[in-house]
Image (cartoon, rainbow, N blue to C red; front, side, top):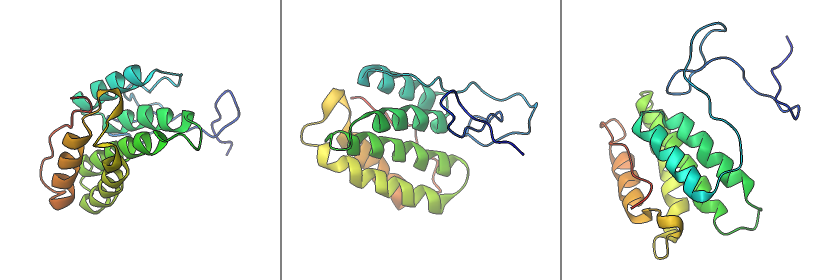
Length: 151
């Protein structure tokens, strides 16, 4: 079976997805997909927060991951965006009922963003996110509130 490909020939799953990013059968009605495009940090944070507020953390992860991967390897902020993407993945695992995955990925994300707490760029609430992440790590089965990316 041929794989779905995007315009650049990269593998892409064209199956529809539910709000938590789980693939649905071909022909099923899924939720909107994240439009891949360049965004400013403000645009990325605003869109990711919108997805989080709508209980779509998988989609927030895609926006944050796109921002992370658009930065040069040596860019100091790359670790911050990677950590933010990991926090969204952790919330995705938590919402899917996978406490082990939630704990592991959220812990990784917390560690990645913590060094930015003293001088957080783009108004990101690093301190609040670190505290939120710690609460998820401590009890991933609890109903975690939606985190706020910007103070």
